Length: 322
Ligand SMILES: [Zn+2]
Image 1 (cartoon, rainbow, N blue to C red):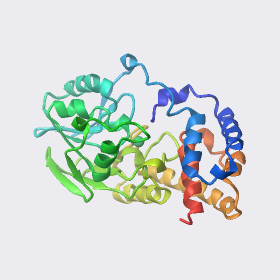
Image 2: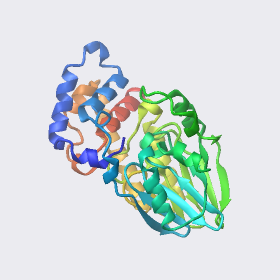
Image 3: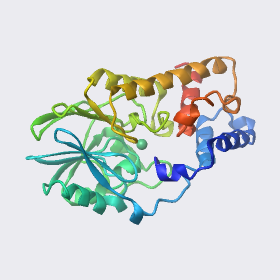
């Protein structure tokens, strides 16, 4: 989940960190090497996956022109992208099912064209939750092979998504859509946020939609439970940095439309935290002790959201010798 509204309701960060440290003291020694358990424990402490959904009626869905044929739609959950023009509409992600009507109203405020294709950037339900609704309106859903596999299995212990929500066209190699006067390149990146991450490059409009591999709201969110990795995060950010020119606009999965320097900053903070943890892991320090030492205390006020996924992912990568 990436719900900023709920995040703002969390306790002050210092308290959360102390609570995390306290929670790990209770972790049995036999479980201390189980990174998945640590990860889930941190999630539980943060309460990020346990909170209820927002009141959908109060969610404000807004649409914003980005550049060329590309728009961004904001509501609750991941940022949507949209290509609008003579060929119709391509939608990138769709947030949660209860928001589909509001999203359609926002779309209809700029275009009456049909939604021909819907591209999922990854499997999380704040990005694919409206799939069945948009499929029912005639959109053909595209996604990475792994997104369909995970939706068919269900993620995080949840039941499978309904078949109507499953992507129809799946891929693990780059594809191009020639649409609204430009080539829209859609391509997988190394497993970063999840193992089904893709980027969407609107080559004529000079816009990249990067899904949750890029965010401006905090540390990278590395969902190891769904195949995300530290190295993939660094590699995926580098791909965006190399692809973007100085004027290219980057739509993040969460946060604000940015330029290349924001991706560079996120890559660099990831390297910085990794460099801080490396000697601690080399000393054989347990994850609990790493967390208790607050190695990122000076950075957390700016970057600390999703620390529950960031630190375990880095610790896991370093203990694996990555
Ligand atoms: Zn996500």
